[in-house]
Image (cartoon, rainbow, N blue to C red; front, side):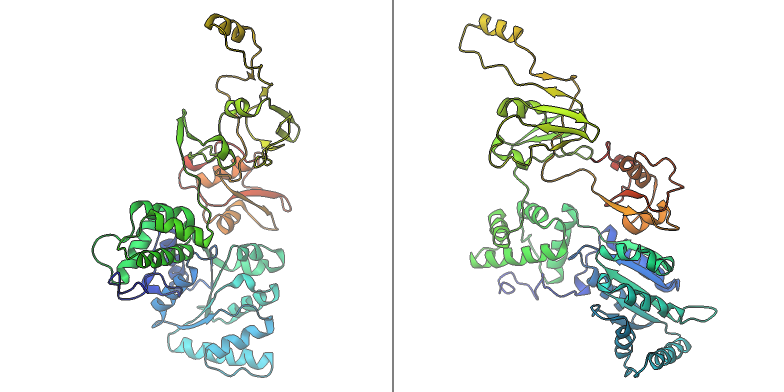
Length: 467
């Protein structure tokens, strides 16, 4: 173990949800504020969603620690249960032996809730991994909010789970539950800056003092390979520190993190050998052998490279438009590793690219000039045309498709699925749904596209529609 080697007092990257190690990014602070608002405002239902490994359980433990002296708490994590078992599990956590019948269990729970309310301690039920609850079990949870007085709810409920939970709550058959949700919040992955601060925070809590244990390059690699997911960050840092100890070093460098990444079989973004500056973006150009891993560094249009590179290397390409949109066709066998380009959809400019003329044999400068002057143009497009190429990774705005249910509005759909609603989000939605004429009226049964995350400024709004 490396604890003594690095003069630490405990394991900094453990696998348990210890609230002492909680690092609060903007979305974590907002989620905690929502949980506290739901509790102190006696709002009834609060929903928290996050991808796996984002630290929602740690956040829930922080919330429970905060309210433990002010409320009677129940933490339900065994969600692979039937509806009839929900009451039994709650009573057991409250220290009550469940009765034999459903009516008996309801009377027992009512007695506990009334007793706690008289003592000034509301009961708070936190359900983790709530996406595993069946529709019937979710309905059983909803009925718990019927325990109330004229002034307040006797039980407040927090549902926490993966994004599938929001999808379940949007089903028409449990619309009554969604109507009772007062607040919905979501955790998002760390940025590279947050990742570095998170690692430093956990090391300090574990007793580290002195010079940094990770080089800046090592931190960049951790942020890249982990995709900002705390659980993956912890695993990667733990393995890197173990390698550092095995090599009797005091600092984790790039090579150690790369070896840990290979051991864990985590994906890494390809190196960036060169860039081309354009008017509104920086297009990253990789060697031809790495063409399938092209990455574009741009906040607006993240998939564009010039078609000339492909035309020069592979030969003639045709870009054709039809009612379904443009498609690229390669008029020759596609080399191994490039099959994803064949018939790939093209999403922006209309252009036709013909086969290039044969390369002239060595000749004088004058002969070469004459040949070039009389040869047909190899690229027929306007000077400002950009040909987008679909790569394996779409760095543009990601979206999800949802179906509008009875009573749904654009605002509540955005709150449930995007995590916020403002002018920038509205512009994102309009860009993804060009046929959406009136945001204040969306027909029941139609499908709309919603961005995966909310933009905070209008500059975050995509400049084009997703194909």
